[in-house]
Length: 260
Ligand code: NAD
Image (cartoon, rainbow, N blue to C red; front, side, top):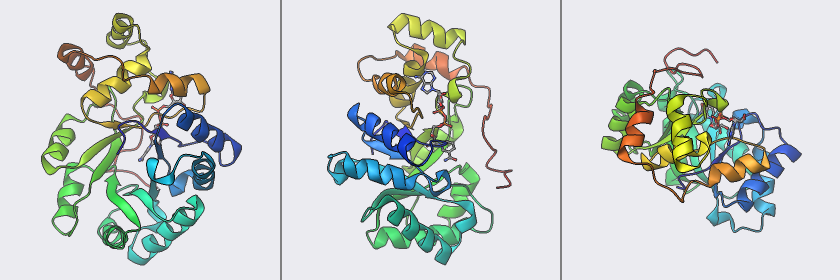
């Protein structure tokens, strides 16, 4: 799974998402993160198919939305997503949120899709340690990925440690905090030190911690900037300084208390 991908939440279906995906692919991105909920799977699929890059070189993630959770309904939702994308298989299929009383049945459907070869990897999103423990007490295949909100204000150390022990790849959503807190002195200082932008410092911090990261942008120069993070290295001290920014501050919903 590539360490860097393009996130396409709130990118409009049609021209906007097609252009964003094509531009990202031209800058070397080989991973795209979409979801049934984002309503733009068709555009993502078209852009991938029209890119001229072989399908197997591009890693596409999509997710089952909350209202489709349950065994049969997840199988149907997967088939719809696969058709929307226009692919024979999907690289990574995730449970979008841990819907109480439903996610174990949903997981059984993901296990079937994996065993049937319809999806190359299966995982979860927004799962806390207790959700993972509950799921793993009852599953035949462990989640391979957990995609969670993670950024300098929410460093998720305990979850990271747990997932590492369990061999679950952590993936950061909202890594750039939607552009907030970019004037924080630690980030601004590191940007100056390396002659990089704050976005590049944050994304590099993700990668050095072996966290997959999926920044969103539809702006050409930002997509390019966000991919230009492989030519410098933060020191352990720099990483510790970013880690110390943690405020356990969520910008999105709380996985233990959401109502959608
Ligand atoms: P993000 O942190 O990636 O922020 C994106 C915003 O940051 C952009 O719209 C732009 O305003 C700004 N930005 C991007 N590049 C920049 C740069 N170089 N300099 C300055 N500003 C820049 O937030 P996000 O879109 O919420 O998260 C990224 C992806 O994570 C989503 O697109 C989606 O794929 C995924 N996601 C998943 C979940 C989930 O529940 N699994 C939830 C939210 C997002």
